[in-house]
Image (cartoon, rainbow, N blue to C red; front, side, top):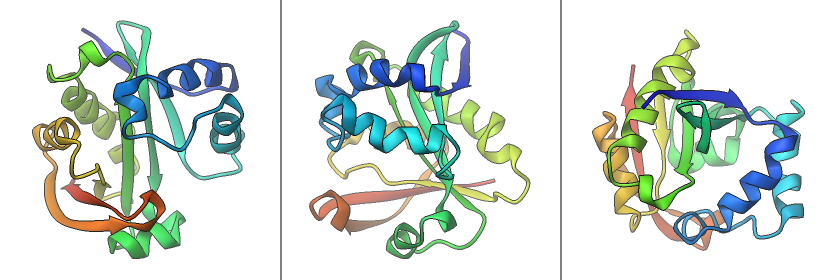
Length: 170
């Protein structure tokens, strides 16, 4: 299977909304219940008004999920929460079809995204993510992609749920 990425466009927001309603996604991505919520949250980045880069994951050219990256330093409250230095990117992703999870595709997607997108920026020397401590499938995917668990923390933006900070250095 060939993995690729293309920038998320405003025309993709209906599809993204549909994906966000799927049970295996909604369990971990709970903030975007209505289409209007999705537009309000993602359109500013699509239009370049927020510094997060949004992508559609492609498997053999077909939309298969969502992935985003950002410099942690662009989000001071989050940076303080996770305690990382300059030059660290963040990444979040999901595969849209639950049947695709648990087969190594998430890890391979992460490896390719890091190589092609995140670490193509010379100033970026590390990448972090913060899956919910109960999201064992996600934590395992990050570990298989080369990330290591750094610590756990309570996320006040997520109902004070416990998260695992994972990190990979270039």
